[in-house]
Structure formats: C-alpha cells, structure tokens
Image (cartoon, rainbow, N blue to C red; front, side, top):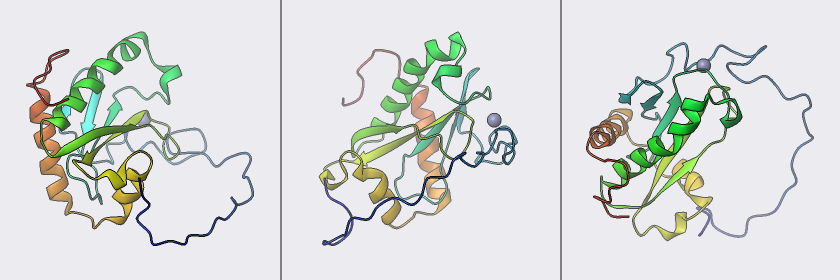
Length: 175
Ligand SMILES: [Zn+2]
C-alpha cells in the first residue's frame, strides 16, 4: 500500500490532548443529531432496523453508509435485535457493492468521532488498486477527484437495488 503523496514526508507529533473532548453531534452539549433530524442524504434503502445512505463529496462510486434507525452510539448500546442483525445486513451491503463489479474488496469503517448516532462506512476498493489497500483507501478517497453527488447517489441506488437480490449465505457474486 502507498500513500497518495510524493516522498519524503516528515513525521510530526500530535497536538496537545483535549480533555474533556468536545461534544459530538447528537450527544448532550453537542449539535443536534443530523441523522435523527433528517439532515443527511435521503436513504436509498431501509428496513425496520437500518437505513442506507449515499455520501456527498466523495470519489468512490458505490460508497454507502449504514445507520441504525434507533439513536444509539455504538455496538455496546445495541438492542439484542440490532446486535443480532448487524452481521447479516453488513454482509448484504458487502455483496451488493461487490455485485457492481470492478471492486477488489469492500472495506467497512466505524469511526464515530463526528456524530453519536451509530453508522458505518462501506468503501469499495477499486479492483487492482493495490496502492489503496488497508488504511490507505480512505486517504486515497480523500485525495482523488470528487464525483458529482448525483453520480454517487446513482451508484448507491444500484447498491440498494442489488440489496434486494443478494441473499444470506448465497455466493452469487464474486467473493
Ligand atoms: Zn440520532
């Protein structure tokens, strides 16, 4: 894997720690939760537990983010139903993205540093783009030219359509 920058880069240290940390969106003292307020891209797919959304200002078509319907922060706050279903729905999203083709692997990230409403990111690593393996993919995603938001939404809609055709445990797309 390779950084999308010319060498030599120089190492620098982190800034001073900020404790207590500033409140995130959707937690006490923070801005309102954007997901609960509907101030995010409208869902391209949903069921009783989850909603699936396109990104804005991104460079990788097929990128989507999955949120819980319920306002919970992280895995340890999941209801039993959410906990039981997360693996199943994540596998469905992964297979749906792979079914678009030209995807080497689907990365799944959970950061949680911006907002306190559970969501995970699915990023397709373009097939053959070995520079972007591992932790390099989000950096490449940031550096590559952004696509129009409408194009990102259309790709997310193709993922959503494929969600209806991929079934649990069935290898009907390249692994
Ligand atoms: Zn929320």
